[in-house]
Image (tube, rainbow, N blue to C red; front, side):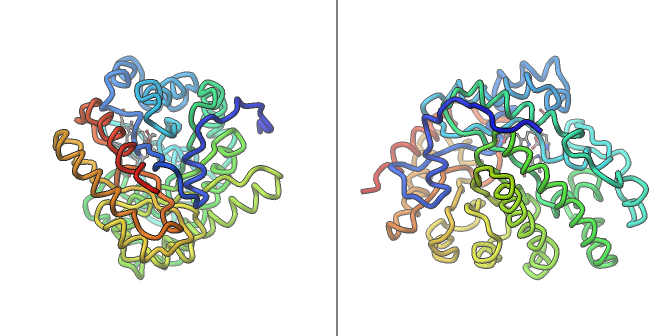
Length: 367
Ligand code: CP3
């Protein structure tokens, strides 16, 4: 494990201050999937390299992570390491290919498969050390311009991919597991959570300054099932990552949870899950979310990514509306502007630039 790096001094700490609950002079802003197919410079690299090949090659992952930082220099407040949530199922022993969406040729069909298809012990550093290398390299190359975000998929979302074998509209197979094999499902969720904890601690050790857990399929569960099957592993991750960082004498980096679609569980998430920042999708108003979440967490989000297809007038109007949703009591304003889900491939990069400019303009009206 690489440790105690000598990284360049951070010049823009807006994201980290907002994540710790501070009211900032304007909202920090970044977008999920900011290094992706909407960027011609990304598509250029993809012409000659496979998706997971890029993930596994630190110099390429670093280059792609830096693409939006260069293009939007001065407008964007964080870099997110180029990788994918599905590197964890790979590390656990499953094959995953991108064609063009994710596909598992041999997914988990029954609980017996957990014993035959997954590694008994996962050596996270051996399997995913390439992500740590990419993070350390990127921290150096960023030269302190903005903080670097590390991430992991939530156990429930990864469980669903590992059983469905790819994307799914109904999650019929993975949900059947929850009802047919509740105890085996919890065992598998916990196994995934253990890998997530180690991977997040490794990313922080390698230089990640903010960690995000993507529970992209949280909203597919009923509030009861979310509390039963997803929340316990999310709580475990937050608690264990903090404990291990503390035990190793490492800085405790802010932890963010993006429980997409789980807005009816927001109160429970904000009160119990142990995350510093809660990411929101666009299906809840920010002022309402703040009311429900209370003053002790920062919020992140939540513009519908499709607003970026609406032209400049719509972008400006909707960003202004979003920013106004945050003008509550002064102590409750810690907010990181973002989309409510990842940016999609058809967006014009100049429209994303305009989104950033509007966030700078309208979130800076705090007294
Ligand atoms: O945010 C970033 O810029 C960092 C990189 C990042 C990627 N995926 C790159 C990627 C991150 C944080 C992810 C997370 C991820 N991956 C999630 C959680 C967030 C979400 O969108 O809900 C999920 C569910 C995945 C799984 C995944 N990977 C899917 C469903 C797909 C295909 C469809 C799609 O949205 O692109 C991917 C592929 C993927 N991951 C691409 C990128 C840039 C495009 C693949 C390509 O280049 O061909």
